[in-house]
Length: 115
Length: 110
Image 1 (cartoon, chains in turn blue, yellow):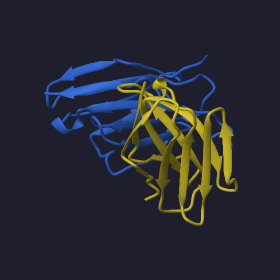
Image 2 (cartoon, one colour):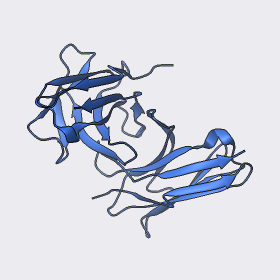
Image 3 (spheres, helix red, strand yellow):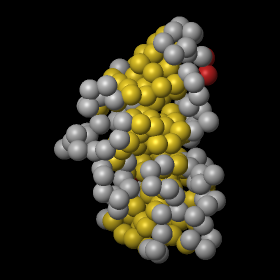
Image 4 (tube, chains in turn orange, green):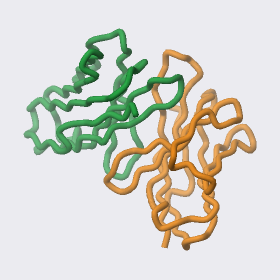
């Protein structure tokens, strides 16, 4: 069964360092998402991406964040200068093109710990 | 914000009992979805109900939607210990953004 894969599963970094989280969405999906979940809290929308551009982003997704799909398969989230409060699980999700299919397929997440 | 708010925040039941979780949201939606999350894992889609539907079933799951009250409920019948997880409702208003609620943590005691 096709799945969304994310790497790394866990990354520990120092405050101020750049972090890149990688995702390989399901191959025939065209909509891509990043969500964040601080431990034990709600799942927060960060950004959606379609047709090689950001289609929507939340207030959390400030200038420190960026996304790109560099090679047609990977979908990356970059945090330029990490802060302590960026510590969270980051989930990538993808969705097929069909308008009636709202289901998001999630990866297992990347746990980011900022020290 | 279309953010869903689930209640209860936590629910503990005995195996075999039914579990009911409720979700309220604020703005108009195209569809409402329920997801499950095992501790520390990714979210798994359970069921989607469109705004023009009132009830939907999938196995032991039953979802209702009341757009006039902006609320939905998820019923899990004959619960099992393996149903222990967090359950989130998610609303989709526009074409792409899916917004998750705060979640209900369900514990099913064997």
